[in-house]
Image (cartoon, rainbow, N blue to C red; front, top):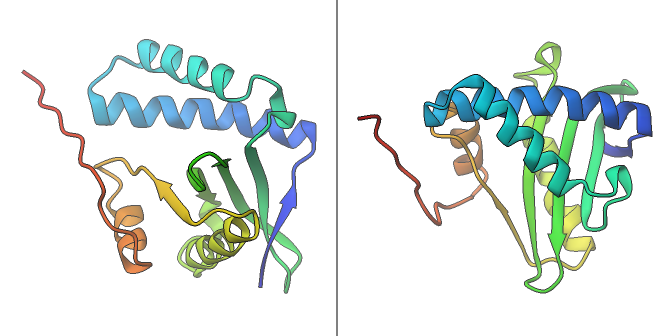
Length: 154
């Protein structure tokens, strides 16, 4: 069984440092952006999104734990928008050691229950074009494409 455990400030800061670099790498690769510019973009996004750090209203960030083994297996970050009754999944990360064991699927199903519990009636997400594994997982779980963003290097 999957549980979502609140992060403490130290875990949050460690995650934010990790996520800024990972997000910068993703936008650099997917949008042909130089890494220094991608890092600036990532820093700005985090600063705006977490204006009050871990206490930022509407932002939820949890450790994903396996209750059977009492082991943290990853992290999930989402927000809720009560005006439109929609949650948005910003990031799900399963530690490399725990990948391909069904934790991504279990965490997403637990997330659906959690956002429903919070009063939301839909869950949206974005996936980078080069992340085929995530895209296939989302499709398998019933997510449908609502828009497609494309670019071409010229």
